[in-house]
Length: 173
Image (cartoon, rainbow, N blue to C red; front, side, top):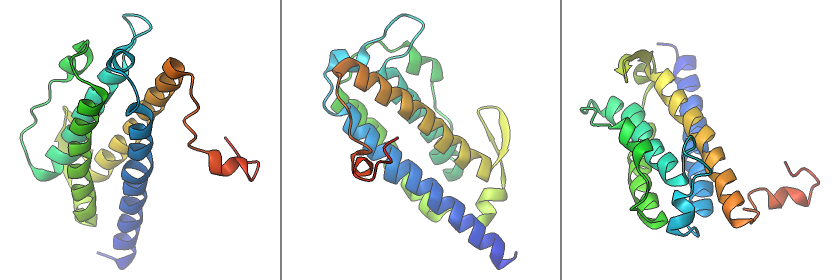
C-alpha cells in the first residue's frame, strides 16, 4: 500500500468525523434539546415524519451502517418501527439514545484504516466497500439533520443561530 493511500484515507475519515461528530451532531442536539415532547412528535400529516421518527431512523442507520458493520456485530435493526413510532420518548431520551450510538460511531471512525475502507461489506442487502458505508452515513445524517432543524425552526419560530458568526462578515447562508 502506498503512503498516499493511507494519507487519503486519513483525510477522508477526518473530514467524515468532523462533519458527523463535530458539526451535524452538536447542531442537531441544539435544535432538539429545547423541544417539548409534543413538538418532537409533531407531524404535518400522516405522510410525513416527526423529529422523533427521524432521530430513531438516524440511530438505526448509524448503528447498522457504521457501528455494527465495522464491528462485525449482528444487525438487529427494525427499520419499520423507526417510522411507526408516534411518541413515548422525550427529546432528552431521544438525544441520549442517539448520543450513545454517535459515541460508538466516533470510536469506529477513530480506528478505521485504509484497509477497512476498501474491504467489502454487505449492509442492508447492499454490497458496498467500507468507504461507501462511511460516506452513506455522513450523507444520510446530513440529509435528516437538515429536515430536523427545519421542523424545529417551524414548530418554535426560532432561528437556531448556527451561522451567526458569519453574519458579521456578511456571509450568512
